[in-house]
Length: 355
Image (cartoon, rainbow, N blue to C red; front, side, top):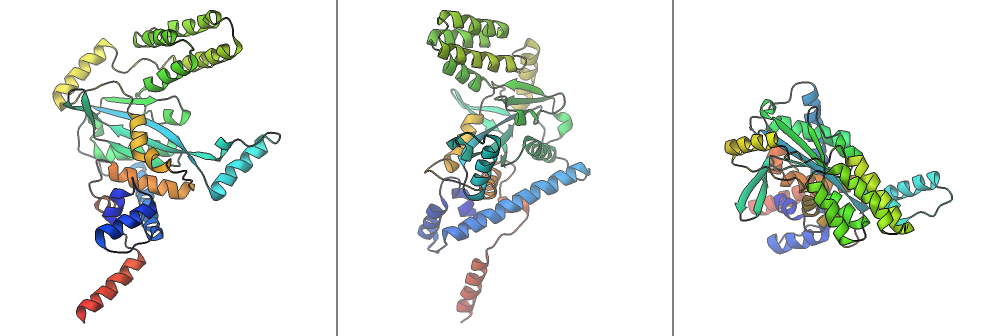
């Protein structure tokens, strides 16, 4: 029954999940009872993560045996509406820092973060690929904590001595940079870069020209071209401000715009990896799709608002269940979660059978 809840909670609200349980099993389980189950599991997952981190730091964590030559990391966050004390805490903090300003609506939002790792791409049809070896980390955490959990997941799953390539793809957020290990490759995400160019450049043909320069690795020319557009657009104040914002964005990322697979040497290495694994190694940029599929679709619909702890627990249940290493969430955690209401129901049912 709890497995059925876990399987459906990524799509359904607690109330809808309650109705589904009754329709499927005939058992009446309130939305509050389902909420309690998810919170209990989320807490257990968080405890499991902390125990794994401690074991890793003490050299007691069991090493993984899976082999992969490459590990890819991506991360991002979604802004969700907070409620109760969590919302008020953000409002009070803004008022302290900006006493003479009206509190904007965005202040009530908090960032729910999602990090993921994977091994590569498997071709399943024409222009159809599936990510292999996906593992997720989610919650209201800083980048350091996400990095620690990712590190232990990788260590307990893989023979890390066989990992030769470690690439992190990011929109440039500082917390994501903490996920980059020593000797790892860090690159700017092309989706966010193109989105920024299209948003801040007025003429479509100019935006396309800048994107073309990006694919041709003419990064310095991109910045010069943006500067020249200020004169082309007759120095209009609004356009100049947008172009200046884009210029700062590009300057900040000019050292990490180069894609991990663009050099001749890397292409040869990736071909050799493909022969060994049967996987392909493509341009990164899967985070937005996974953000939507794993958390945004559940947390941002129907004007929902959340508390940090309950949102983190739900996110942990959803993403742990979606991770490849978790075939069965109970076996994965080696815990049993049974609400008191179920115990009472079971005892009553047993007595009826005995009679």
